[in-house]
Image (cartoon, rainbow, N blue to C red; front, side):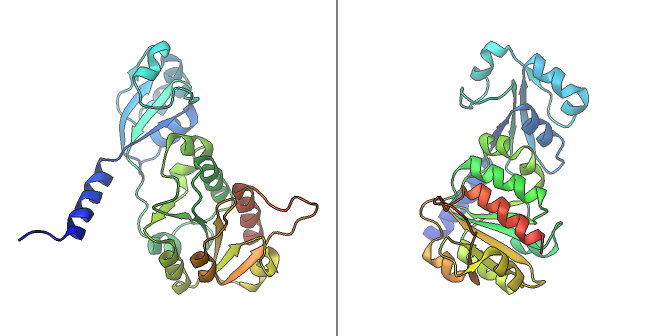
Length: 260
């Protein structure tokens, strides 16, 4: 009996996910990944200088390093030659953090998550992961499509936070939001036209867990995302320039949520 198309597509996607690997680069990103017991490490490529900087203890958590000539480094690893790799690159499998419920109900940190709607710039997401870790959020959540996957650039911007801060990519963001609401989360959408301030929205959540929902710069939140939020809030500003970079807005919002 011939398998249905949807079954074939699901199996193909599962095989592709199993084969997916990521090249991390830069001393800090590589060091943090090597020290992460959750991370499956496949191949470590270093210059002698980078190996000396990492030291025997730093290297011990990964595969045997391949020491290469710095002038030929780019020919050994498939990363952008313009990347600031510092002579260190590590091929890994993407992290598997577990289900939304496992992380958001019983995970470590404050009862606080960040949801990103079509934020595709890896540098922005890396910075948001870093802020989420600083303020103790349980997870950063983004749709599987139209968001930045794990990449070397994201990991380098995150300054190690990618190894410690759960980054969950879900099939459908609106469904994940509904699931969070069923868990008791109040979802605060950040929008320049919000009818309350961020401080008022946080205060209105009382002691309930909070999900901060941020959209891409320019288009902002999609209609479905806006409709699924419990409240739309604005960050007050002064002067004629009334918007923040999404990573800066995330940092401000995380501070407001943890300061309640």
